[in-house]
Image (cartoon, rainbow, N blue to C red; front, side):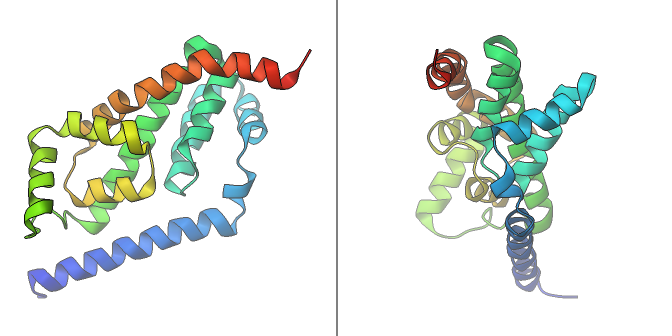
Length: 191
């Protein structure tokens, strides 16, 4: 049986391989380049009555493959309007990042939990003392991105805390989208 240190190294290696594989799939298949507002709208409209479920499913799958989550948030507001779009976008942001954190935590484990460095210990203790507030603050400034999701997974953040913290932290961005997208789209489209 391998030692605990060896097990941690193996899990970290598996996590790095998973990150690289996800990015490789997203970039080599052309998915990351193909994803734009028209592509998302076409998939959602093709799903008919299942459009919202298709939107959230595509959102989550694409973010796990390193596609930028904000393009999906923007698409949600454009497709579903300023009243339904932002809540759907917020749900997609929170769900996709939480799935990513859960998967990364399962593969890589909680590698940062037992870290010895004093500065990181202090940051982690704040994260564990007030997980929802800490994650909300991180999301407010760093949004939903794979490196942050990976760090939160290795810090031992749970699905519920990540989901709620992400929803709180990304809510202001979704409100801005609700207010700003429609006038900008009208302006770009012209008379």
